[in-house]
Image (cartoon, rainbow, N blue to C red):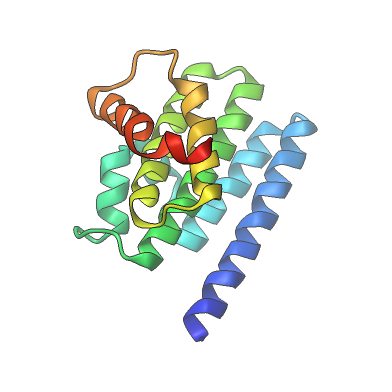
Length: 160
């Protein structure tokens, strides 16, 4: 029961942070929006700004799973991280930093795909499909291309 309460409080906090960041984006206060997101990454996940910016998606997965397969709590944190990265990508895109935005979306897609392997929910499928539509017209790294193919072979049929 305590674990469920903890997770719900964290989800609520993340929702507030994302709403604030999107409001700041709308006001063109891009740096403030990114500060909010980076603070959430540090508080909720223990990932500081440098880690969020420098770690690859594979490194993030390894870090979240502590070197093992993701358990349910690590998968939840993986989703939170994907949401933070996706929101930061929105901010970067609005700011005109398209290359950085693309990089964040690729990481978010990769993390979402890992979550789908654990909990194959409709919300996760929709988020993953939305991320994929935003990145698939560009050249993707080979491991992301494999995840794209996996999405279409395994998960896409569940959306119809």
